[in-house]
Length: 316
Image (cartoon, rainbow, N blue to C red; front, top):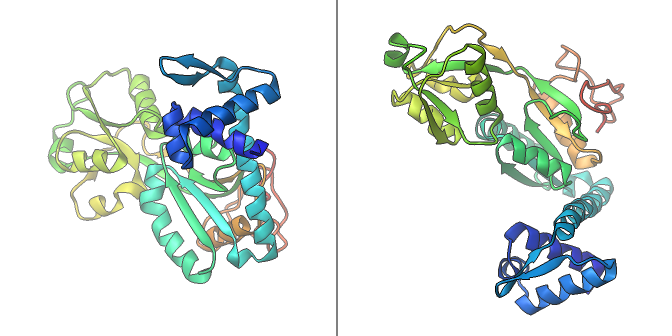
């Protein structure tokens, strides 16, 4: 068994938490998993697992090494795809990740149009809370993320932005009777950037209203329509409900909050990613630091890279 195979076994064990889970994910026997992890530990000279009951669990060293192994494998997969895409970008692979609102409301139309223009390119999209999408790009498991601003210190470059506003909305009846102390606020799941902003906003207003956690973006919007309370949400995520009057915007202090969408790539990206960034720019997304939606794309049509304020520059 190669070192790469052993690394994949270790990552599978870390992800599933058990030998049985790793074996199922890799479609191998449990004894093969145990043997692979044992061989990798001997190769490193570090115990990666320890017995617990009838199974095994990662040691502290194993947990640390699994994080590195995940990034190494992600980079290897990314490199293989990038090499193939350079040979023929139209037959390449593009792995996208997006926060929930972007995945539900921004990307479907963009991806449909992109696929019509590039039918041979393999597309994959993962929709997850903010914390998870940044973890994916850091591990080289996706090529481009659509979300809010990258977290401080992220090894990522902003390549395009699009205006976005966070507003407080409620059903008309709830808005009419709105009260800071008594109107419930509907919150997203843990790890959601919108939830973090909502909690920070309430703290800044020095209020502590009732809170109801509904989990997903869709559940929060549906709850607001059903008169369960008000919520802080992207205007893009409730455009239809605002248009037909099922929800109305509350004119609360400090809102709307301007929180642009960001298209972000990792430290390495290839031809397929450049094709998608070009598609974003042609669809009205802007180059970082500019107001010109038609700005040239660095590395695609002669554009000059601009410095992003988060990390490195905006070349892809």
